[in-house]
Length: 116
Image 1 (tube, one colour):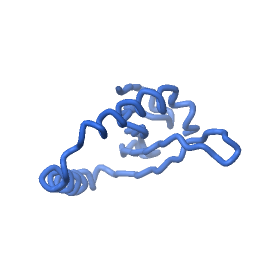
Image 2 (cartoon, helix red, strand yellow):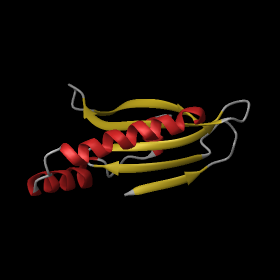
Image 3 (cartoon, helix red, strand yellow):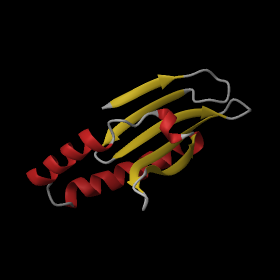
Image 4 (cartoon, helix red, strand yellow):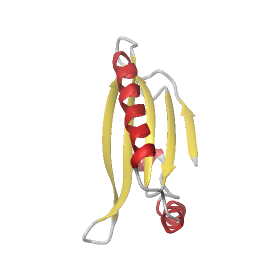
């Protein structure tokens, strides 16, 4: 499941895409600097529960600048190819577990929840 949003160039996101993947949601946000230079932020968000039983979103963010796109993509593609060639196959149990967790854990995530 994914969501795409395009926003104005007023310091907010120029483009956003949310990708729900199992227990995590990844947000790809195109932003611009004051000098109108574009860059990408990649945010991983995962719903967690505190000791008080209330949930919160644990977030990790990467800033990727356009001069680094090529090297980043080369490294990412090489790492993904290595995993595809060498990792053990996903079992049917893992697929079912991933499917059930993605439908229940992240169904209520939206951009406002992240407090960007």
